[in-house]
Length: 43
Image (cartoon, rainbow, N blue to C red):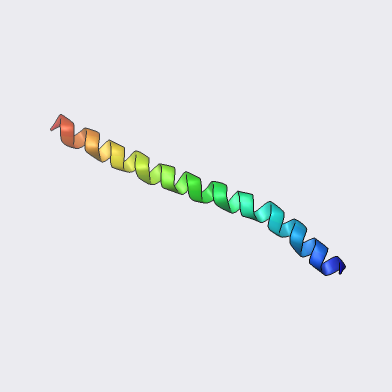
């Protein structure tokens, strides 16, 4: 029972961290795409 509680606590901490990491990765991809578009427009 204690093991299940520990796993639940760890999961509740890890899930938001993983979601934030995925969000930052997507935002970085969008920034790179935006930079490419801006460079293409400037040509």
